[in-house]
Image (cartoon, rainbow, N blue to C red; front, side, top):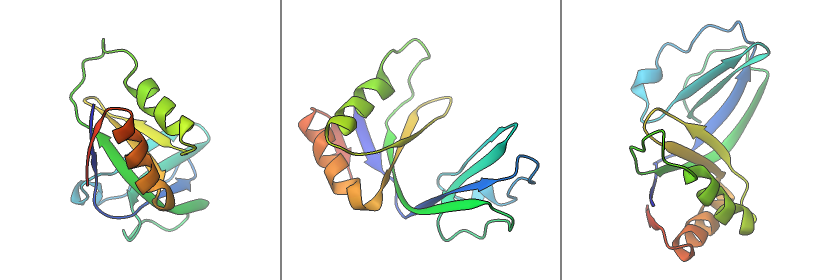
Amino acid sequence: MTFSVLQGEYAIRRYPSEAALMPNLSAFEFACVSKSPGEATYICPADALAPEGWQAKEKGWRILKIKGPFSFEVVGVLAQASAILAAAGVSIFAVSTFDTDYLLVKEKSLAEACDALKKGGHEVSR
């Protein structure tokens, strides 16, 4: 697999599930919103002007994009990458889109994550 590191620091924010969507999501290279009955989770650049009312926020995330697209029949993409990172002691927050997968790792673990993926036989571009 081929990974690329997206530029910049990202934050993960938790909002109440009834929170309005952030209006400027299309302005970012990467942004993600997921909603469940109990919460709404936003992932966007750490310095983005996010709506008030967040309940929790964690900054300091970097994003590794797995080069896609992958068809839905491809098995084990996330499993393989997450196993390598788990063996290296790197915690992840995974997000999938229609075409590919993204792995968020803490800034302090980025170099270790990239090294582990390279040792696992994968390409990583920064």
